[in-house]
Length: 206
Image 1 (cartoon, rainbow, N blue to C red):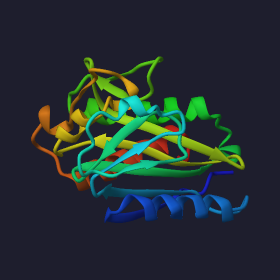
Image 2 (cartoon, rainbow, N blue to C red; image 1 turned 30 degrees about the vertical axis):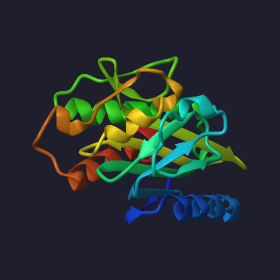
Image 3 (spheres, rainbow, N blue to C red; image 1 turned 135 degrees about the horizontal axis):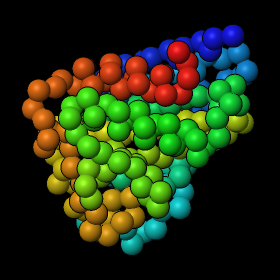
């Protein structure tokens, strides 16, 4: 039987914490019949520190808030011009383990970048997507009751300076890049639409 495609919600520019609380509530209240959802947003400037995050990776946050969250991974930055997709998925129903889901998300992003003639890759030692040695996309997930939340962030056309206030993803000296450094002919709407389609395809909804 074909899987029901996720509901895609476009949230616009949002504050981080209310969206995080809504993700947790959605996951807590869902049952085996609840359709999956993808939430697309951009956030006002915020650093998020994962459950394993260490304080020494917060270097000079300045006025940007640092929020302790319940996903895996270390610290990252979210801000306008970065596409965030929250993946609210029933992994049990999809037959996916968390490692397979991470690989699937990475491959969707790599396929998207390939369509822009960009050669990108994943790394076994550090989840995410990279162009040469610079990170363009970060991943962080949490699994509860066989369902996941949190998701991915893809740098499109943003102010990268706040990444200098942290060791991105807990990696000292890690370079960060974005799509606008490599191509000029794109819109955020186009990227949203295409990446959602690739995610659905890679996860196996179609």
